[in-house]
Amino acid sequence: MKKILFIGDNSSLGGLKIITNNLYKTIPKKRNQNIYFINSSILNYKNIFSLKKLISLHLYQSKFYKIFLLIDFIKIIIHGIPSKIIILSEINAPLGLLFYKLFKTEYYQFIHGNYSTYLPNYKSIFLKSFKNAKKIFAVSEYSKNLFIKRVYKNTEINLIYWGVSSNILFLDKNIKKERNIIFNGNITKKRKGLDFLLNYISKYEFPYNLIIVSNHDDNDPRAIEKLNLLKKYDVNFFIKKNIKISELRNIYNKCMYNFACADDENNFGEYEGFNMTIIEAAACGTMSIASKNTANECAMKFATGYLIRYNDLEALNDILNGNNKNKIVNQKPNSWEKCWDDIVYSIQ
Image (cartoon, rainbow, N blue to C red; front, side, top):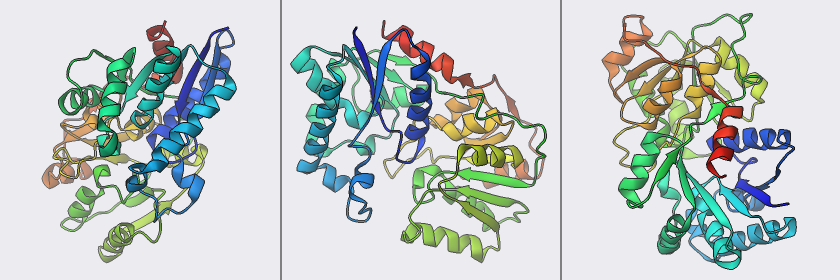
């Protein structure tokens, strides 16, 4: 029987973990197909070495990247050469090219938009990898347009929107909304937009509890600086790290707003390809405050809340004080089952 391989990351942190975890749980239900999942060694380099301060993209640009690529290659060979490979992260693209050259294996590439992960020393390899992919999938119009603008123009890109598991993230009518705002994202990553909220708090009264879900390093100077500012402004905030999905569901259900505002200028070279927190919040009946001209605007097509320009303090103040009448009410998020069906249909 022909094998279909998914390669991604279901053990490290971030949106890709959510995506691959949900796909991984969906795959076994499809008994009529010989499908398996491999966790990428490249994406989990921090877990392998546990030397977070010493290991960075500079390591990727050295011989270690090829070593990790070889490890993943061996993992796949042990399972058996697949007929098709679905690559869930751009950083794994050369692996698809390798199997295509050696075994004529078809491979399909997902793109998210954070192209700062590309290795300068391997730029030509990445371009060849994208060009030889059977199909390229984008998770939003934003990530699609960004890919065309920055990476590769002459290619067709298919859209597959991510969804949520409705049996895991849902509105619990027994939980009452409180004056809470959730910020779900690593506070050391500028693209997540916490600087906007800090700027607002420095100038306006903030009568909300701030729930921060962030798996950051406590000793990171960027994290220390931001948390000290919250203390300085006398904000009642709570840090949640490494929480279970059930706890995250309860947090969303208690919050009035999910703050998800990425900087559309992106001078720091990092991009959000599709903000999963907006979809998660929508599933739990929580409104999002999202930024225009970013991938967050794409995610808001499946959510309820507000779209404002990044760093528009007056607009944010109107929302938090109930004076903004431009609430967006859109369709409900896709289910993971629909995502799965879209993927399977696209690779037939």
